[in-house]
Length: 411
Ligand SMILES: *[C@@H]1O[C@H](CO)[C@@H](O)[C@H](O)[C@H]1NC(C)=O
Ligand SMILES: *[C@@H]1O[C@H](CO)[C@@H](O)[C@H](O)[C@H]1NC(C)=O
Ligand SMILES: CC(=O)N[C@H]1CO[C@H](CO)[C@@H](O)[C@@H]1O
Image (tube, rainbow, N blue to C red; front, top):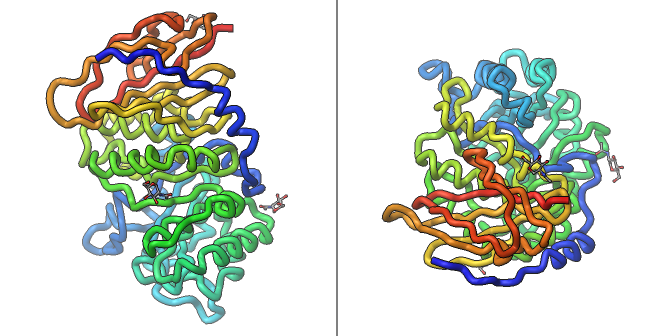
């Protein structure tokens, strides 16, 4: 198919940046945070007796921290090692302080944080705004100030704050309160909120201005699952709410479409790279949930792809614009540095056939500068040469895959 010139003005995006709303001023998440999170791969496996190598334990976290360094992930930008639900003991201690499960985390969280820090990494932990966590462990409601202090004492660097067992009407009070308590500890702790996600689950509308003001990253949709359908459903929500979400995205605060599943079981290599491409286009946090001790080579090189990571980590921190969707093919364009440059993704959601042949003129996706652009294909690192506004680019997009290029404006 041939896409005719559809003019698109990068100027709109510059205006958009100018009116960006307040963000949380803790100095963190200037670019989308990157790291690793237990949930999709290890879930709430607490059975260390029968499943010692896969249960949620101090040993698992330390092994992942080791792998983050030796596998080159830290060097590529993945710095947070994060524990999700199910690390807690069933009860608070006699002083009402949170405590980890003693058999699975025998040396406590301060020890684990020190270990993770000694590797040059940061430690993330999980709690819940409600009376209990999603898995039924003690929640933070009525103890938020104490819990913030406890996390700071332990040396925690990121808090994922869930929304189970709470009334989502209270999120607009509870999340700001926790944000302020975290601030008062004096320790910069990246605040990952499920505030709008809680509202979605209880059919309440979300106001993203305060969310951005009190959180560094925020979930607003269902958990990602290890399937292309799940990834597609998330991309669809970002497409439907594109201009709204763009307004609240930028250094200091980002929408969180949930974990990266490259290296998992449920998606093909093509689907895994399509997910990474879209997340990079959204300026989304990149938290892998996989087993870094055992990762296919293809998935590893995808996770470490420097061009892809550079698009995600672009200092402008803009969320891509969805220009069109036609016959299951979506076109997304993200302005990146240096000014006037762009990352471009063709995302094919069709799951049949041998791919979609595309023939498209560069100015139809915003490459209108006569000086031209250096164009490189992201997954293969193929340099495609210089593209002028009238140049026509021809390629195929595989079913449930993406085609991704980076176009740097020639000075
Ligand atoms: C707390 O908030 C103030 C004002 O927004 C900010 O300057 C400071 O860096 C914050 N401190 C931490 C530890 O987040
Ligand atoms: C464009 O590519 C050429 C050849 O690889 C390189 O020398 C030049 O620095 C690039 N320019 C930009 C703006 O990226
Ligand atoms: C979170 C959010 O704002 N979601 C909206 C995205 O767009 C769909 C379809 O228009 C709405 O139904 C959602 O409320």
